Image (cartoon, rainbow, N blue to C red):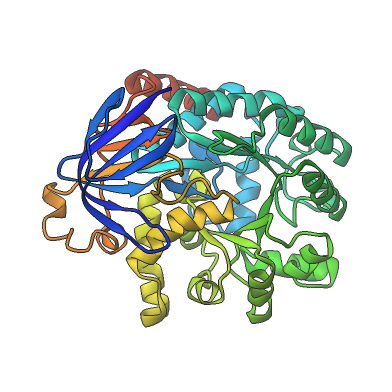
Length: 451
């Protein structure tokens, strides 16, 4: 039995159902679970001094492509929109291997941890030569070394260029091969228990890179295995036109016909839904991962977040792939979302605190998890600390609930705790040697891009 006592917190923003903020409080985390919150001192194996700090629930990232960390800021793709952008980058991504995925995951998840994210969902769908097991092994190894809560996916593509899709032949598989690898990934890694550190979803890539049969069979397999479903949907008008021309219906209607709505499904982006489709999402509990920076960079559009929140659609926040975001910083995403929707929706925009709840409770709901997303006894010991006496926060901490949206935080948090373990301290990762990882990762990037 291990325990951590977080003492003397100046404020604890719980994000619970009552929007409670505790002042001058302590937290006891025992065996990864919050056992006590309040003014009393409790004995523990380890003590973390949170004096002068604001404590927040760990952020939940609901959509990422960690492998893209090593193909960001490439000059040849900076002014392209989604379809042309993907076509150009597949020429690089087809050279992925286990070492590249391991180090790109270390870099991406390391940055997420240093900026307050404690649960990472990753959508990996590029498996050159059917290298499913090796690449997922690499991701989970990186997550274990860092101490982050990992929610991986066994993504897939079965339509290459010759079939009318975008990827090259070397990164697609047959439906039977994909289903076999999906089942193997779930059996090896998926842990549905309370406070799980490892989970797996099934995640065909998108309507323009997978067949209707793969979507249909993936939904049947996921439900037989008791796991969730994820894909990209309604990200661009190009996608909408593609589905209308090929299948004669709008993207959501197409997915609904294939069994892809319900409380076990969430979509990345979800920008171009109409009013009726938003109501269907709300009525069925189908979720959306909101990726504001990626959507802006690729000129994809503005997601209808105010309407989704008003209807009760499950919405989480996400950084998306580093190649379309150029970072893995969910705090930056939170602030960008606040500003984007203030510009676009004015008084209807979500508040800074609404965005914090989207990045915590909202993300937990989208991932189907009741054990993360808020700070309460009986929930996971996932949190991060920010010293409120930083120069850049003078005068900014009058509303600690909204601060991360309205003002934001530049730079790493002071500490991050996952499952009751301190994984970032004084802004530095504790589980790995950062300088060594930087050297190894830089060498890996060079070799990868020169293939």
